[in-house]
Length: 275
Length: 252
Image 1 (cartoon, each protein chain N blue to C red):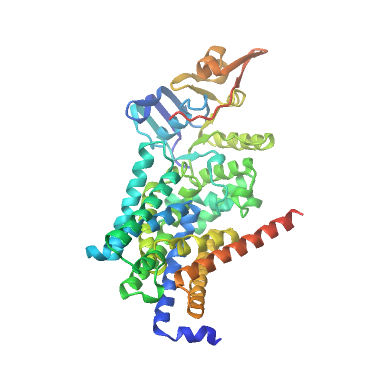
Image 2 (image 1 turned 135 degrees about the vertical axis):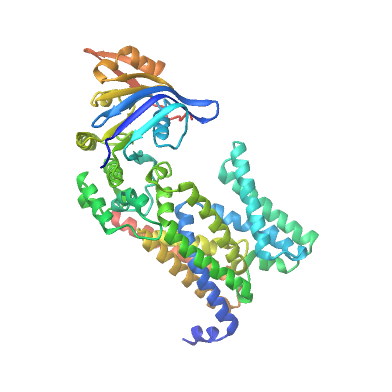
């Protein structure tokens, strides 16, 4: 029991747990829509694309969330331009831009601004060193995800289920899609300080993808994704504390491991039913 | 269902982009209680006509007037079968337009949705996952959704595609009932035999080829005009039968 209570008595761990729980709400709820709408690769790439923005934020004197948002919007703009103009498919263009952004970030960090050890923090986050601004951003993302799910959930469900038929249902499909992307950008920026540019999927995709294997209803999916994100987040923090690991990667490994276990159990169950 | 249902289309042309006309010269009227088969090859303009009637695609020239609430019944093959929705959830989507964003779907609308599912013979399957239903059952759920919308005019996009014979008969029986209630049905199909069952047939191949009662309208000349060289004509008694090569290109 002290394995659990000792770390949680320390103020910086309490802050980290608070941030994790707020991000679990934002990531779990929005992640459900991201996974249902097949935007997981886009979300991962949008996170990685913020890296060059984060690298230049310090030297240029821009607030990190703004620099990240700028880089993310640049990524989204280029992506829509490439896919609209030519024969390049959206996933190929996403992969291309993701690689380009990471490479640009590495060059800026190593040869232009000589960011040194700070690069690790930008790529993998620093859940144990979050500021008040980071916590406020996480809280804002959590509230936005809750409100949006309540207000736009039906629109997102109808549009994702049947894009061609949704407008005729009186659902404002295009409006809903735009707001989903805005919210995705906000959530990516909010999870960056905690898990870094490379690991945004840890909170945005993994819990929701695991939840899909566990439940078949939308309510169940939203609830399970939030619960899993919270459990994986806090569990990863405790693992990191006791085993002296970086917290972002610890949460990612825990989330990935849990997905693998659930997927395996599901496969065994399906095989048993088939017999 | 309020207001007398009717469709009045005059000299309609519609384009997805300026200059790229997908459908032209369409003129027809359908009145309450009429079911119209919209016959034509893929890319012939059936979906374009529907989108123009729904107001999603502005008329380049002419007009498309619809009287009464309108609903679109999509092809079930286009919907996502892995979505976490039950048959009842899908039927309830028909009530979304009248549900304020800050409210849950009203209890009354839940009762309406259950009644609509019962009407299409799926009361027992209300809680089944949509993706686990057969093609014909899914099509009936989508018709129930249009009933929840209280639609007087139903646009059905290939309702018999990917549906077995028994389900096809069940769907035809439901559609017969709906037209008997005074609704207007537009039924997109590429099946000439299916088209013969309905009150009118509208033949489209980028432009209107013909419109009228099937017995008079579906002549060899009209079928050739509709399907062009894609057709093989067989003379079965006095009726022409079209056998269309299947192509799934969508020339938008």
